[in-house]
Length: 354
Image (cartoon, rainbow, N blue to C red):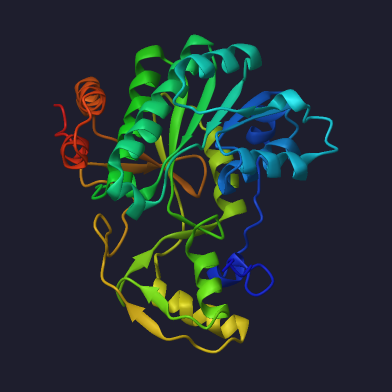
C-alpha cells in the first residue's frame, strides 16, 4: 500500500501555526551570489530545499552529491531547464568513498559546502550501528577532509537535536560528526560549523506523511507515549535557517536553531484531524523504543549557549571529547567485524577533556 500524500490535506505550516517562508538577509546573498556550491545528500528533503534556496540567492553553480540514484534522478527532473544545472552537476556518489570525494571536490572547487547526507532513522540505526558510524561519522570525516585538502573556505554540517545529551546511536553518531567538524575547524582555522535542529514536518519518512497515511487509510495511529513531545520545523524554514547560520563567522561552532516550543505529538494528531476534517483515529500507545527520549533537548548538560546576530540562531559552547581515540576504536571494531553491542559501547559519549 502506498503512502497517501498529505500535501493536499494539511500543510506543515498550518499544523505549526507559523509561516514557513524563508527570509534571507544581505549576508546570505553576499555568501552565495556568484558562488560555487556543493550539497551532499542533495536528493533528500532538506538537501533539495537548500538547493532551491541557494539557486534563488544567485549561486553561479550548484553541485549535487547523493548515493540514492532515484532521489538524484527526481531532483534532476525537477530542475531541468535551469541554466545552472548542467549534467555534470549531478554526482551519484557515496560520501564514505574518500578518494571519490576528493576527486569530486578537486573538480568542483566549491566555495560553500552544505553537508546534509546522513542516516537519520533512529529505530533502524539502533539495530544497525555500523551503518550509522560508516555514514554519519566516517562519511562526515571524508567530506571534511576533502574540504580541507581542496581549500574549501566554508562548510555547514547539518546535525540534529538528538546529538544533545545523546541516548541513541543516531544521536551519538551525529555528536561525533559535530566534533569532527569542530576539531578540524579549530586545527586548521577554517570557517566550518554545525547546525543543530529537530524534526522536520513533511520530510521523507517523517511523522506527517506517516500520520496522513494512517488516518487517510483508517488505520490506528501509533504514538510512543501520551506525553511525548518533539521540536518541529517545516522544510523551507529549516533549510532557510541553515543557510542563515552559514553566514555567521565561526571556527567550529555548533549553532542551534530556534524551533519554537516543543509540541505534544498527541496534540499534533488532534490538530491534523481538525484541519483535515477526517474522522478521529484510534490511538495506540506503543511505549518508547530503544534510544528514544520522552522529550528532546537542544543543548547537552555541559553546554551553555549564547545569542548570535540572528534572532533565531544560538551558539552552543560544545565540550571537547577524545575524538581521535574514539574514531580509531570504531574503525578497528568495524574492520574486525565487531558486534552491534560493541560498537554501541564505543559510541557512548566520552567524558569531557579538561
